[in-house]
Image (cartoon, rainbow, N blue to C red; front, side, top):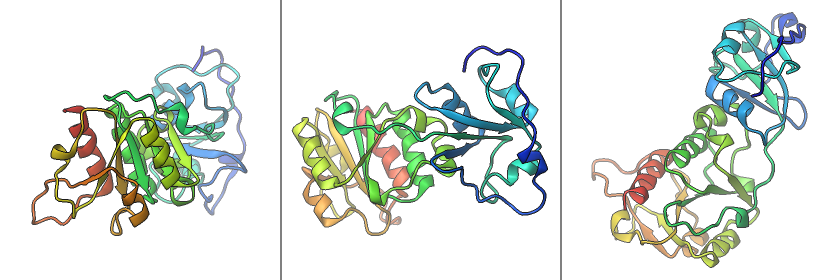
Length: 262
């Protein structure tokens, strides 16, 4: 985060807000993040451009690293910070407005490393699930996640909080057409393995030795038919018959562990 000199204290808006509540949204074109791990990771990310930080003194002192002396900080109490985020958001005393991350292209992340899977999400729209999947992707060294642009959540505070810093470290590719993107994934040498409860083979039986793209659909409807047709094989998790399915973020974590443990 740079070297720390005398911190610049900019008082005003957050401290003056009386009554009412903010929308939890950043200004035009910006992304609003909150929570220690999400904000700390964004501050450490050299690819992230920052606009302004609101925080308590205690939250600044707890950061791992030091801010530049001219970093735009506005100190505020927790009730003022509550008004900057959505209701009951666990901001932990720190809120950051920053620019969205730069676009990531699929060809930039497909290296064919068999130890680094690609995670493909078909219409998984819940930001908490996508954030949790990003966290698992970081834990198991996935090369990226791939989603369809129109059917995935935007960058935002809830997603970044669930990702616990992984939003800043795991490349996120947004494709206009997911089926065409899966063709590109196959051309790069990845075996496209879709998770489906009705599949005959288990995940362990279906895993190849080479590069894998694990494809997961939304909870409830699962993968769309067209996306399943763009998979090389389908597999299921060998869960108990007493449970119909797993949450998609849990299924992603189990799948990524299985790939890592091959």
